[in-house]
Each structure stands twice: as structure tokens, then as C-alpha cells.
Length: 272
Ligand SMILES: C[S@@+](CC[C@H](N)C(=O)[O-])C[C@H]1O[C@@H](n2cnc3c(N)ncnc32)[C@H](O)[C@@H]1O
Image: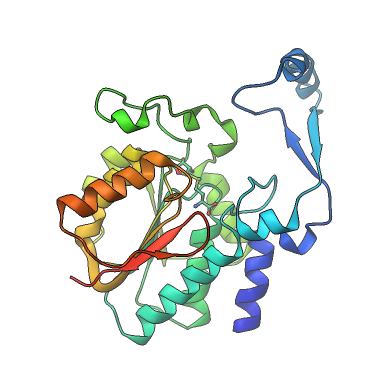
């Protein structure tokens, strides 16, 4: 089991072929002037199934740490955050904490694929993995409602738009698409208040923005069991995300110790 899960971590992050060059298409939010010149040519080429790509040699340390946006990997969260998911699930199983596992913000699905794999490796049949996403990228900031999202540009990154079909296909590639995986499609503000989730043992937030983090906390944290885990991926990288967590903790008097996972992410065990 340990060998399967360790190998899966390498494959989901594409670390098993990190020495191979990657080709990144021209889908950046703000192209440089050189890239702008290339865009019309790229459009023409695409009609004939060609495209212009940037050649990149990935950095093994950054990939393992989860600080680059991989061209092909199913997850961008790196090895330590995958280890953290495994640790939390195994604690939940050991202490019989009631509830399902969930991620809000799944991108290509790597983290939720890994959650399903951990359940399978432990032969768990009575828990489900919930994968919530718009499956069309991040929302434009609602600056009137959320000042902390002012100027947020995540919605401009086309590389963050991954369809539900693509995510399902990624699960299938690992033989992990079954009735223990459930998808919730839509903007969190619409989908999470009506999501048919009863109880969670693990809640992983990876929606980057203040709004996305706050919506998940408001609608899902009350469903997290005592002894369950809350993971926040973007705590130290996106200011709005950290502020949402701090505001929520303050409002609800949450004092549970915040534990760092790596430079970017944190988690805590829900104690009350
Ligand atoms: C950084 S990516 C998640 C990375 C992923 N967890 C992984 O393992 O690599 C952020 C994801 O959150 C989704 N997202 C962010 N805010 C959202 C919102 N308010 N409603 C729905 N989806 C949202 C985006 O569509 C995107 O897929």
C-alpha cells in the first residue's frame, strides 16, 4: 500500500518524468509583447492542429514543493501536501472520525484522486470523496462584497479552467472513478449552500481567493466533525485567502493550533 501511494504521489505531480522538458501553450493571463505578436499566428496554426508552446525544463525542487504550475501533472500541490492529505486521512481512520473527504477547488483533480486512492488502499467503502469546482476556473472578483479580492487576477488564467469531463477522465486513468467520488459543479456561492453533504472528516480548501475560501468555510466548516481536519492550501501565498481564514476564525472564536505543512499551506484539527 505504501509503495502504491508513494508512486501515485510521484505520478500525480509528474515527478516521475521531471527530467523531460515541458511545453506550455500561450495561455498566460498577461502575454508579453513578444507573445502578443505570436497569438494571431498561434490562432492560425491551431486550425491545422499545431500550436506555439514555450519550452520549459521543470525544476525538481519546485515541483516537489508544489510551487510551480505543471504543464501536465494532475496536481500542483507537491509531495508534502500530498503527504499531509494521507496523514490526515489515516488519522481520521485510526480515530474513526465520522464523515466524508472533500476538496473545494480541484483543478485537474490530482488531490481528490489521491484522496480516493488512500480510501481504496485502506479498503474503505463507507466514505465518499467530494470534488467541488466551477470546472471553468475562478470567478471574477466581487469587489463590492469582498474588498480583499480587489485586483485579483486568477480568473484571467485560462490554465485554471479544467472541465468536469477532463477531471473525470483523470480519475478513470487511475481506475479511481466510481460511486465513492461525487462532483459538485458550480460557483461555490451557489453550489455549496445546497450541496447534499451531511458530514465531513476532511475539508481541503484550494480556491485561492477570499470569496472562495470564505464560502467554503461558511457552508462546510459546520459540517466538519470534531477530530476532523481543515486544510488551507493558499494560506501563505494568497493574502485574501489568509484574511478569509483569519476573519472566520475570529468570528467563530476558533483557537485550534494552526500547523504549517510547507511554506504555502496550513492545517488544523477541529477540536470544538
Ligand atoms: C489552484 S486550483 C486548485 C488546485 C488543485 N487543488 C490541485 O490539486 O492542483 C483552484 C481551483 O479552484 C476553482 N475555484 C476557485 N474559486 C472557485 C469558486 N468560487 N467557485 C468554483 N470554483 C472555484 C478553480 O476553478 C480551480 O480549479
